[in-house]
Image 1 (tube, rainbow, N blue to C red):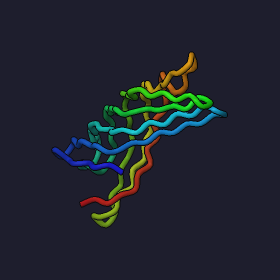
Image 2 (cartoon, rainbow, N blue to C red; image 1 turned 60 degrees about the vertical axis):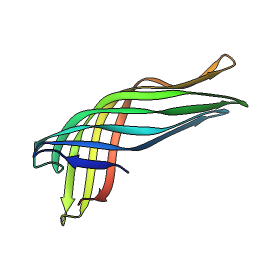
Image 3 (tube, rainbow, N blue to C red; image 1 turned 90 degrees about the vertical axis):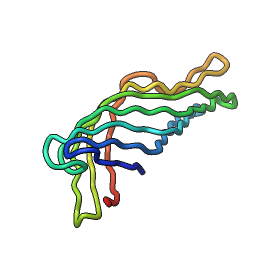
Length: 130
C-alpha cells in the first residue's frame, strides 16, 4: 500500500508502509517501517507512464537467533524505474525494477543476521487512482 501524489505533469512523490521478513533455519529477521521517494515521468503525465526515481526506507528490525533476540534500525536507499498504467481513471497497475543499498541487521551473542549490501527492488502494485 502506498500514497502517491503528482506535483506536476512529470513529477510525483510517494509514501507508504513497508515490511520485510527473512527466515533461514533457526535465524529470522523482520523489519517494518516507512518508505518514500520521488518519481520522474519521462513519458506520459504523472502518475501514469514510464518513471524513474530515488527512494528511501527507514524502519525497525528485530531478529531471533535460536532463542536470542536483538533489534536495530533498518534503512535503505536506492532507485527504481518502471511503468504505471491507469485504467478507466480508477484502477492502476505499476511494475518496476531497481536496486538499493539496504542495512537491516541485528546482532546478539556474537551472531548477526540480516542484510547489509546491494539488493534488488521489485515493484508490482495494484491500486486505485483518484
